[in-house]
Length: 274
Image (cartoon, rainbow, N blue to C red; front, side, top):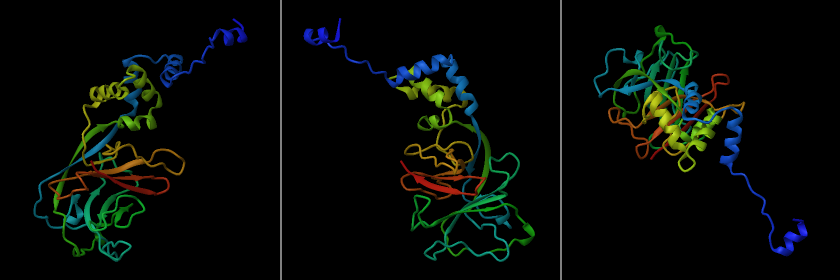
């Protein structure tokens, strides 16, 4: 039928639009990716090790506790250092420190990491005043200096370390495995996250909120991984949950997230709560 005949007959073929599901299906077919088994093979390489921080009940600090990994209590300082302050001149509260040892998911260039926070300022983002991530590339325990705590809030708690595995949240899988995200959508168009969640549970069991070193963040309010100077997702340095034993509550049972670019030394901070 000619164009004019279509007009006078009242019949005009409407152009068909390709849905993003159809587009994904076509792209994946070219790669022979179509099954639940294929999705599992795409997700497996994304697994990252993480070190879970199991915060023990508050206890009396041992002698020279500043030379141990712990929450609260006294942090490690070297001669000539001062207790950290915010831009407003107020002393920050010491939250925790971890000495890097074999098996922990910390960058090899960091021998000690510490975190300080101002509970009155209650910063939420990198540009806010009142937080500090302090790192030491090398620790010289012979130069240790005790500095009395100018502020007192956090309880001393020992840490037990446990190696676990993590995978990205559904909202973040697209950053690390674009084809895994597309195949999940194709396998279940109504609930595309369901296929991915099934694979995550099969490979590493269900992920819960926890305090950890490295791995992938478990977001409270949605994917917010910052980018490095080259546009790649930054690596998670640590994530700290609201911890009853240490007396920590980030907003409404929230978490803090700290990202680190080892190449540039850049650090990004954010807080999310439920």
